[in-house]
Length: 302
Image (cartoon, rainbow, N blue to C red; front, top):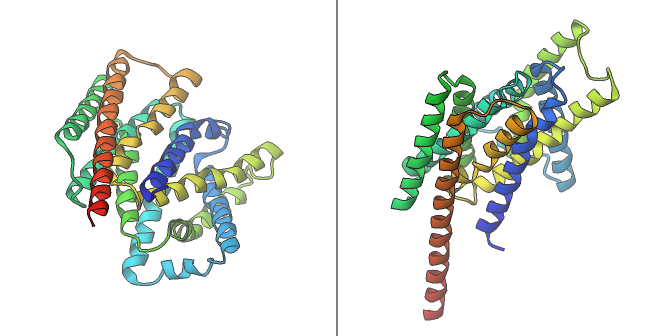
């Protein structure tokens, strides 16, 4: 199995978990979003630390926080991902999962543009047309809803910038995300101190809440590890378009399971987005097959 294939499988796993994550956080709707996010950070760190300890690599986290430039990248990435986490929980709690899904429809456009202009990744004419079609569909959906999608925009921008920063980190995926949650721990400690000082904390209040808050760790850590692994092995443009799996599953949760409204604008935009995804994926697979054949021919001739 090639590195690209492994990266694509990791990407699919990431988006399946993220796509169905509103189901998990809906069970914690009675817990304040900030408290849920704090426990996401704490139990993610426990998960990461245990994994690295088993691998004998726990000491590498210190290396990820060495040097001003690298520390700055890790701190910036931790801020971006914490905002992203919070917005996901908050949108679920206020019944705005549809807007959440819209944010992750916008993000791939950010990733595709980043891949093209920052990393020089090539897009064929068909892929450019697919991206333009998806962009038009998202614009139509935004216009049709008639409100500024601030939740959507914050998710798209924070996750887009996060992906760019992760591309430039010269450390392994598990180590890098562990460093990010380590950086967040002082803020989390202050937040939980304020919560429990008022006696309003939910951890330990019931077995169900306690287990769900602990489970937020592996629920958060697993897709982050997979995403960090995938982003180094798959072109940014490919990751960006595959991300449409995530908002589609979130939209399914919002409309079918949570009963949020499905408008005529959704009925027009979503099929257009899926068509754009199909065109882009077909072209990407065609290019990959052509590249493999070229390599095989070169190997035979040598």
